[in-house]
Structure formats: structure tokens, C-alpha cells
Length: 260
Image 1 (tube, rainbow, N blue to C red):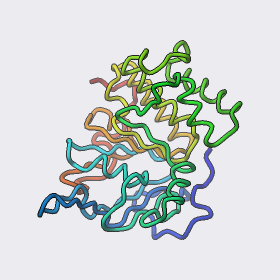
Image 2 (cartoon, rainbow, N blue to C red; image 1 turned 90 degrees about the vertical axis):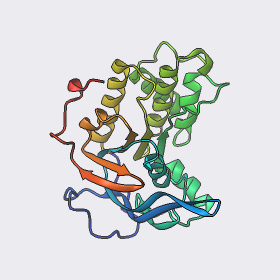
Image 3 (spheres, rainbow, N blue to C red; image 1 turned 30 degrees about the horizontal axis):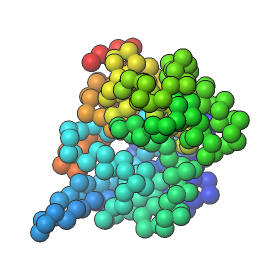
Image 4 (cartoon, helix red, strand yellow; image 1 turned 60 degrees about the vertical axis):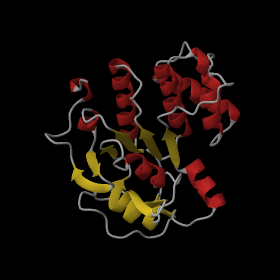
């Protein structure tokens, strides 16, 4: 199990109604908005979002393009700053903190799986993953961990290939392996199965499910409603607002029952 991420942090308000007794709150957003100025107009990517996520929860954020899904993840992961409201992640108030503190937060708390991979083109698959793992451990341990997670995502025979020598699906799996190798308690993923075939996509969802079962908090953004069936909770966004928040309609499905 991962350690209690908020043991040393400030006290948080009362937990949300679905909170599991004895389980810490990993993410708490209160009235979070993100506003952009476009010419003389104001455009809201998010508007007055309240959200709580427990440690070890697997939450899927669902919605069409432009609904605010990626902006929500970016704020939780401290890649973007809200223009209104309050965000507390792993016991840290991340709204308004300095660049140095933000760097430490991203290094120690959150791991990202980006839709665009963001791999280093001059490093092999193994080196890309090892780079992420070295942030939180020794080089020897990072190499061992990198090999282990690359095997988990089915790339044991592609360790020494460069991104240009990998398919889009393989590059996505390297990006996922890099995030898993850090061991950080919060994993945020933007369309992690978007460029994968069904079989590989199911394998990745199984990996993410296992991470949540081990105590890691997993937030996945997708437009694929089928993926949301395996989540603990589904948060649906519409025009920057939370339209619904609860268990998957019809109950949580087994990964083997998915199809798309």
C-alpha cells in the first residue's frame, strides 16, 4: 500500500458523502473555475467545480471535447492554475504556491500519462522510463523498476528501441510505463487508451485498475463511455460544469466484459 499522502498536511473539510471511512481524501476542489480572456469575451473552461476523490479511487472523467476534462486534470496535476476556487491535493494547497513548491509537488505526488506521449526522441524506451523512475530512487533501482513496468505493458522486447522505431500504441505504452515507474500516489491520464487497439487497451485498463487496488489514486479522462464502466466513480462534465458524479450506470463492470 502507498503511504498516507496527507498525514503531514493541513486538515481538510468534511469528506464527501461517498467517502470510505478511514480512507484519506487525495483531491479536493472547492468552487474551482478556469477563465480565459478571448478578446473582449470571457470563456470558461471550468465553472464552480466541486470534487473530492479518495486515496485508492479509480475515477473516470467523462465528457465530449471542450467540456473541460483536460483542464480539470491539468489543475489537479498543477500544470494549470484556477482563476477561482481552491484546490487541495495530497494535503497541499496548490492554488497560489510558488514555482519551487510546484516542482516538488509534481515530482513527489503526481504522475502524468499525456495524450501526446511526450517521450524524449533521443532516448530508448528503457531510458525514457528510467528517466522518470530516477527522480524518486537510485539509478540501479530505477533501471530495475523501468524494466519491470515495461514488461507489464508488453514491451519487454522493445526496451532498446527509440520512439521513432515504435508504433503509436507502443509509444503510448512507454508513456504509461514511465508514469507507473515513479511510484507517485496520484496518477492522472488523458485518453490513455486512445491510440491503442482493443486488446492492448484492455491490458492498460487492467494495469490502472491494479494501481488503484494497491492504493494509488487514478484519474482518467476519456470520451469513451465504455471505459467508464470499470471505474469506481464516473464524473461527467458538460460545458465546464459537473453534470453528474456517481458509480457507473448499471454498476461496475468487469474488464473482460468491455467492448469498443
